[in-house]
Amino acid sequence: MSKLKLEISRIRVSEAERSAAQLSRQNIQKGVQEFHQNGFVILENAVGRRSVEHIHQKMLQDFDKYHKSSSIRWNQGPTAGNICQPPPLLPEYLHEDVWANRFGVDIMKNIIGPRPQLSFATSNVALPESRGRQAVHSDYYCSHFDFPVFLEVNVYLHDVDEHNGATEFWLGTHNGYCKDHHSSPTTGWIKQEVFTPRATVSPPVQPAIPKGSLLIRDLRLWHAARENQANEPRIILGFMFSPVWFGSRMRMMLPHSARPCLESWSHIDCLGNTEFVNDEFDYLVNHQDINLTQTPPDPNKPYVSMHRSVKVTPQDYWTPP
Image 1 (cartoon, helix red, strand yellow):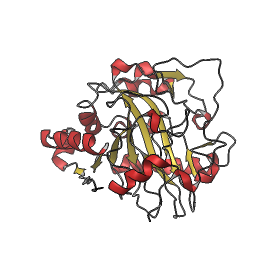
Image 2 (tube, helix red, strand yellow):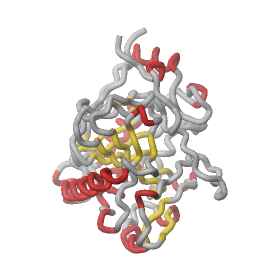
Image 3 (tube, one colour):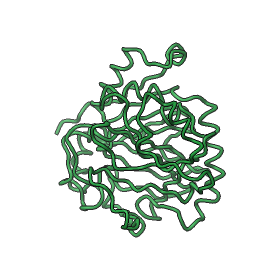
Image 4 (cartoon, helix red, strand yellow):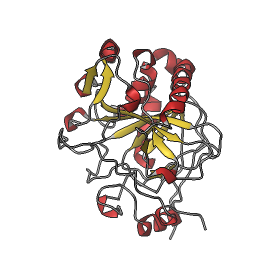
C-alpha cells in the first residue's frame, strides 16, 4: 500500500498582518487549503506575548490548587496523565487575541461561515513528568456530518515539542471516517483495526509548535495527548466554534463583569451561548459539559464523566514497529 504524501505547511503571521489585524488573501487561501487537506492549520506569531504570558502565569498558579482538588476532570482516566483545567474567566484575562483571535476568525469564517459561534472554553494539560498518554481518538463522540461543523482553536501559551507533550495528530483523518470506526458508543476512541492500517500509509506526527501560535482543528480529526517529560505542566487552551446555523447547545459561564468584553467581540457570536453569573463564582469548579449534538441537555441530569474510570491500554494507540 503506497504512503499518502501529507505534509504540514505552517502560516507565519507577518508584522504587516498583525498591524492590520487581518490575514492577507494569500494566507487565508493557504490556511483554508491546509485545513481541508490535513484537518488542521497552524498560525505562528498569531497571539501577543503579553496575552499568553499573562494567562500562562495565572494557569500555573491555579494548577497548584486545581490538580489536587476533588473537582479535577481527567481526560481518559488518571493513568493518561491528562486533565482539563478551566482557564481563568476573570475579565482581565479575557484577551481578545486569545479568545476571539481575528486571524483565526479570518480562516474559520471561510470554513463555517461568518461570525463563528463560540460556546466552549477549556484547556488540555499534560501533567509534568507523566508517562501516560491518550488513546487515538476523535473528539466527536457522536455521529456527525461529513463536513466541518465544530472547530477547536488551540492557543499555545508556551513552546511545545515531543519532550513536553506535543499532541499527536493523524493528518487527513477528518475525512473518510465516521462513528462506525469508534470502539465505543459514548466516546470517540478509534478501533485498533482502523488506526493500524491508517498508520501504514500515513503515520501520526507530533509537530513542535511555538509559543503564541494558534492551531485550528476539525473536531473529527484523530489525535492524542502524549506524555510530558518536563517538570512543568504542558498547557494548551481550547475554544470550540461552530456555525451559527447549527445552534450549539453548549453554554459558557462567565462573570457579569465580563459582559462588556464579550460585547466588543463583534466578529464572533458568543453572547447567546453565555450565562453571566455573580462575579464571585469559582471558575475552577465550573466545568462545562461538552454537547456536540443538536439535542438540548437535560437540566436534571447530573454530570457524569465519561473518562474517570477508563484506562488507556497499548491496544488503544499505535506504536511504531
